[in-house]
Amino acid sequence: MLLEAIDQDISYIQADEHNFKITKSSDIKNLKAVLGELPKDIKVGIGQDSHMFEKEEKGLFLGGVELKNEKKLKANSDGDVILHAIFNAISQAIGENSIGFYADEMCEKGVKDSKEYLKPLLSKIKKKKLKINSLGIMLECKAPKVDPLVPRLKKSLAEILNLKASRIGITATSGEHMTLFGAGLGIQCFAIVSLRA
Image (tube, rainbow, N blue to C red; front, side, top):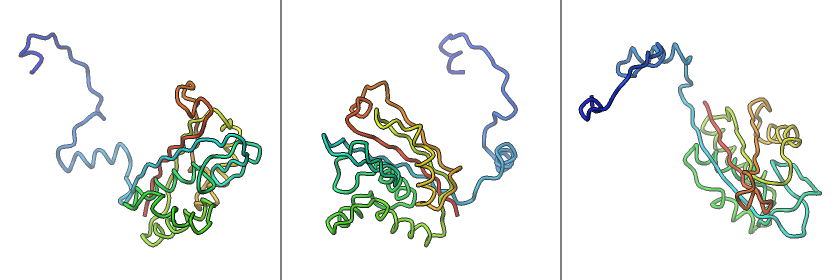
């Protein structure tokens, strides 16, 4: 009607039967019939972390895996960007704080292993009677080459998070080398996690 009011040409396209508006409770039933029954209590969080590489030192930690021949990341901890991003994603999903709120104090006490930072958070979701449903990881870096590492990373993450490896997705990009990470100066990681009762 708006387009007609300003003398614009309009055309019509036949709609699909599944393209319907949710107005009444009966529409919700139709939606469930199309999509299947949705979980009653599902929470989602997204997390991010990034670190630059040290110039000379080697010993990269990624997803709980140590890659001795790859450049080390600059950090107070082991610099594991995957575990840090996962922490932030889980914490966001349950309305908690960023990793620094917990990990800074642990770093000061000499705890450098990022797996240790996750333990209190995993206990919290267990107390809330939640468990991790699925995990998605997206890395931006030039090095290391991520695809050959995926089986090792999934195995490690599955053990740390008590999650089936088939529920973990890991992808990577160099971003056409347009950022510091794609240019090889560090690694950036995004994680998205879903939790269910």
